[in-house]
Structure formats: structure tokens, C-alpha cells
Image (tube, rainbow over all chains, first blue to last red; front, side, top):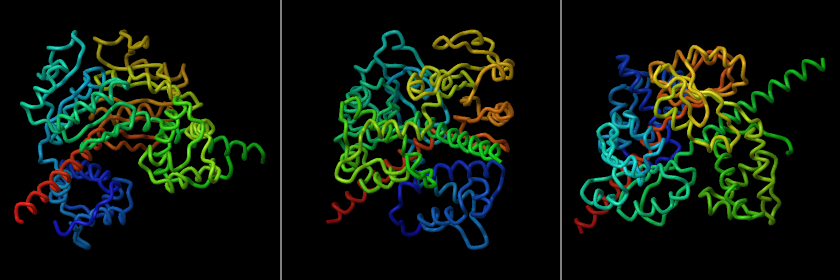
Length: 223
Length: 223
């Protein structure tokens, strides 16, 4: 893989996208791809693509393009997808249930092994064969199973205390769906998901378009 | 608001975060904040914050900080949150239901007015008072109601055809939860949400940490 430079988080955040596009190419039995072709598909400039992939030691050959399968595997390795991380979901409300039913994560090497909640009505029921357990059993479960990632889908006000409890158990990563940027004084890696941020960006883009259309109309009318 | 420069998408994507942090400050009755204080809270450098907010004409005063309420309102305006966009959800599976139950979007000015599906078992049932309608009624509904955004939570293979149908109806924005980067030949704004990308980034960070720990152990043992 060559010498690794310090890779920026912006590049890392693009890797899953490369990974998805390469998976699409593999499905289409395409074995080679140039940065130019990838650029046209992905809407990233070819020079940006070459620069990104060079961070990891340069997989491509000038004028020859990238070997799709090799690049796909390499990016999977960089992302650590072969580690087969085990996950638990804490909070089996609507979002917790939706994520528990999302089989796509398993395809990427993230296996759901437990679901926790405090609602007596759903404890003991199963989602895709996985039992919903009471939060009281969390410590016992984590000490008996290798749990790498806790997916937090608990109400806003309970997020800090649950996150704290999970972090103390030595779980390595938290995937947080509560609309707060979680920070903890422990050695735990946190990835915050803010769905409404994405919706607000969409709102911004629509607003900009509406303003541009209004502007164009005004200009037209004033002629 | 001063003269607007062309603002990069990276800055735009940070605005919802500023908006959330400022909302937190308002809740705490904090009326002024310096870029340094914001920096400590948000984990963005103070100079980055000043640069970001300057893009929109400079809200702050040197040595005096930002007026929290004014900045909050201004960013809300820039994001177009006062537009009160109306949304529909297409696909009332697990994720569609989770999003329909997510009242946070409404607080940001995005109102859900319709839900569509093809499953006869759920058609006619309601989520938060909003009826799930058959897809056959989509065209009629959109012509009788102002629909700004369609939230797509349909299965992967149906995404392109549903997106195409929605775009033809003149809906301005698509918020796509299918794990494909949707592109359409129409004048429609698309925001793709890739939850597994975020999970893969978390996996990457854990992997890097594990590698670092292994490296540290080896160095220790070889001494």
C-alpha cells in the first residue's frame, strides 16, 4: 500500500462514496476505470480523485486507469470493513427499529447482535431474530459479547447519560442519532448523524434557486 | 446582510451546525458569543468560524463577539427556514415511518403533509394524523397541494423510477435515503443521505485507533 501520509477527514469521508461507486462498477463487470470516467460518474473532478487516491499510495497507472476490483478491496481495507464490527442498538423507537431492519449495514461488515430499550411492551420481542433486551442487561451483555459500536437512538435528554454509560463499558465507537453533538471525556470515537442538517442544506439550495428565479423574473419584467 | 460572495458548499454544510449551537446558547439565555467561545464548543477553529460567518457579510464586531439572537435569525434566513417548506414521504417502510415520526423537522420549518406507499395493508392508516395514501393518488395530491420536497424512502431498485415520477411533477427538492447517488435530467435539487457512509467512517476511525494501539504495543514489547 506504500507509505501513508496523514489523510484528512475530508478525504476519508469521500472513501465510502468511492467504495459504493466501485461496487456498482464491479456489478456491471467493469474491470478498469480512469479517473476521468470516475469523475463523470461521481461529480468529483478527475484531479481531485487522483489526489484522493494518491493519499493511500497511488493505485492507478498513468494512461491505464485503476483496476476496479483491486481498488475496491484496497478501499475496503483502508476503511477496515473486513474487521466485522459487532454493533448494538440502544433505543428501539422508530429510528432504532428502522436501523435494526436495515440489512445494508451487514453487507458492509457491521453486524447487529443486540437491541436495548426500557419499554416493557417491546422487551422480549424480536427484530430480524434479534431480541430487544432491557437496559438493565446492558453491562452483562457487553461483558459476555464483543461489542465494538453502540448505535444511540435514544431521546435527546437521555443521550448524555446513556452515552456516558456505554463509554464506561469500553465500547470503542458511538454512532449517535440524537440531534446533539456528543462529546465525552472518555477514549471513545463518536460519529454524530444529523439528519435535519442535511434537510436544512436541501432547504438552502431550494431557497437559493427560488431567489435566483425571482431575480430572473424581476430582470425580465423590468425590461 | 451586506454583499454576498459565492459561498462554498462546505460552508453551507456547516451552517446547520452553527444554527444548532446558537439555538443551544439561546436556550441558556446567552446573548453574546465570541468566535473563540464558539470554537471551544464546536471544535472548529475560531479563524474558520470568522471566515465562515464573514461569507455572509460579517455579523460580528471585533472584540465584542456575535449577537447570538441576531446571528441565529440571520443563519435561519440564509438557510431559508422561514419558507415553511411542505414535504411528503414516499415509502412508508421502517425508515419512512421513522422520519414521519420525527417531529424535529417541523421545528426547522419542514412540514409533513402526505405519506405515500403501495402496500394495501397500511394504506388508509395514519401517522401523527397524516394518512398514508396509495401512490396512485400522488399526481392528484401534488396538483392540489404545494409540495416542495419529496422524501424518498423506497426500495433501492424502485428509487430511479419514483424519483423520475416525482421530478416530472415539478417538486423542487428530493431528499433521497436510498443508497444510490441519485441524478436526474430534470431541474430538481437532490440531497442524498447515505447512512452507511457515516457508519463506514466510524469503522475507519476505530480501525485507525486499533492499528495505533497495536503499533504502540509492538513498540513496547520490542523494548
